[in-house]
Image (cartoon, rainbow, N blue to C red; front, side):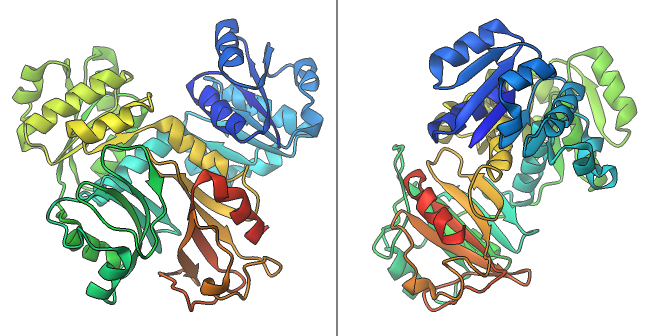
Length: 449
């Protein structure tokens, strides 16, 4: 695909990096020469210096023959303008990054497609939604809902109490018949190696395992994972960023008791006016004494979403030392994900990765309605809609030529989640979840294209 990315900031660079790995034709545009020089040095892409709203510059980027324009500059209005102009000049699809959550909540009312925008995304809004989902499944470190929870992806580290430690997948299925979940990916403790489990794959202590489950399987996974579900009522949020504000608003509306700590006095007063149901504290949350004075040890969850990744990690470590059951840190550096598992932070959230997941479904072939990359694992979980001419249509799962490094994780039929096994027949209109390593994704796409 030919893709233009406007904005070489953190989100734009990260997208260009991921897309260039898959041999797409990428043009990255920015008004910052240093950012472009860095991208040009580290990525196999074309860079253009200048204003992305310039008709001449977009013409130089060959926008009329572009499959996708992704506008992710720091300016919401600029991004909207870029998409509108690009669509008028012939771009097939456009995606605009926005910062105002009202645009996301009301995009259907705005009829954005008539404006020339196919999709609006907000990395901050997506990150806030991700954290809300993590709080709802408090015993797990990674979660993702498909079709409003008809099927769920859940990831966690196996504790030594997990009853299927030492068993193969097939033995576990025999030992625990009638279960409503399926393992889809495993990362061995202390390694970066991702494997797609088969019947003879063994579970080991401290494995990071991802499952897909239907609604009735969540409680089963709590029992079998060696973890327990915790009721979360008291939440402390460090940082009055857009994510912090969005989280506070959502949590307060759902009757959580929320404390938000913001060291900037003007910003703290502004947030207090905006969120009357949230207790806003103007203090330096980096200070351990401040956290103790605000009774951090009595919190059920601590979420650090300042603009500094190191601050977020260190604050969560403090919360962990005070025995706060659930800690979540917002980070920008992907290298921190492996570190989190060894130092005790429950979950790290990266808004660049979340935004990339949301955008990737526009790049993949086949009728993809959802996609998520598994945190710190070299695997993707994709949701396809089966068309009447798809190669997979009317086929029995056992007879399908699914690559060995891929697995059918589940099927959603008529809004009902199904853990589908070998005798299950795929039908037109089914939504099929497939977990795959990168080398098999193109083969999987062909089954649905």
